[in-house]
Length: 202
Length: 202
DNA sequence: GTCTATAGGCAGATAGAC
DNA sequence: GTCTATCTGCCTATAGAC
Image (cartoon, rainbow over all chains, first blue to last red; front, side):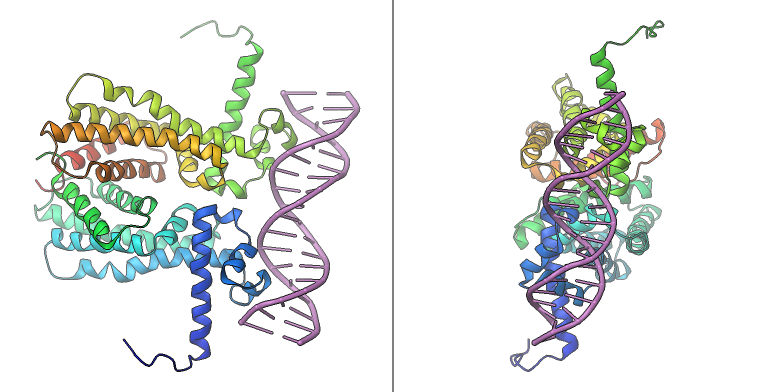
């Protein structure tokens, strides 16, 4: 919380900010209209520059898409997975991850939508990099589930299927959580946790 | 099971078959490469005709996409929802729907993927029609959940959120079920039902 | 019902001035 | 770092013969 943040930013930071601005604007338009239906001019308009100027910041349109997809796959790995390494039972650690995951989905809602729907427009190399993060995340979730089953804390169910089902349920939130408050988001996480741990039957 | 099915088909049936052939081929290519990255020529190649000939069967590329999206939203409404009207407890009726839903996801796997990912490329009129079916389906699922909660069979949880979560979990199956056997599919449905009804905790 | 040929337009990307 | 101007190619859709 710096009060004196008016001092001149160094060039690298300025450039980084511009890139972030472009990525954020692009994600919003991609999410609404679909990646291929959006032109470089549309993105440029949203940022207040001309189409050609975007190429000073990104070498191609696909690289903008890649930047979007990268943040929504890398950030959860770097920010949420450590919660699985903390102390606590598998239940506790899994619950923390679920809450963090849903919060991230809300904070980067449009980016998640793009990352989920526009994979086909990525270079195969970029797609492979994205999938590495995604698979890493899935694997770690599966591992907590397995740990919980080994300790008798969780029922014995195919952990691979449970992990996929749980993550699909969570990730779907970005499709309908538009404009929710912090409390709404935490309520959704609590409902999902109740469902996941205890099920519908009382 | 007619043995003598070699008799000549009437023109209307032939035309219908051709349309279905195009839709099936298109769904496969759309699912793999993304709607906008696929040209009319690609679809035509898969069917063995020239690009221009497609316009004898469909007035535009978007109409092919619409046909795909329509089947995966209308068929579940017409085929699965009646299971909710049958006799039985909410649990039983919901279980039947889940099993039918997963089977449909596998049977029309690529079509579901396209319907899920390419919504942004639909005409707003077509999108509205699609969403009517989808919302109808969601609503009916929510209604069984509410019925089960009223009867005390299900725990009291926000039924809207539970319905969305459950359907997101189910629909995600089309993303990874590629090439599964009938038994695999039913196993997934059973695991999801166990999770949904009883949760992870023994 | 399928073909050849082509219109017409849009969009990603580049060159080079400022 | 942003601009103007433009190239280039692709891709939907149409016209009209067979």
